[in-house]
Image (cartoon, rainbow, N blue to C red; front, side, top):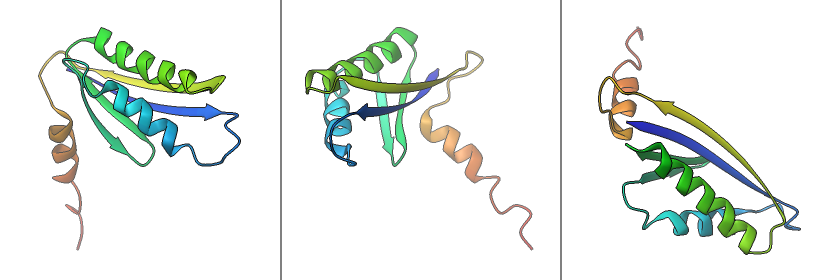
Length: 105
């Protein structure tokens, strides 16, 4: 299973808020087959069994923002590829949560 965190920064929009552009980028990947995503306040988590789908989603998001008239888009992509077992996004979170507060008195 492959997980990736993508953060996209439209530059030169004339506004400090970029949520419109991010929303349009996310809308553009909603129908890509074999990709799941989850948004958070700092980026978007992508999940797929195929790295090409991760790249496709990343490229799509970037291109959509460029097509909205943004001349410069910074993309940060962090990839976690694991082939020893299939762990979904939710499973990774549960694994962390079970360790929280273990040492609390």
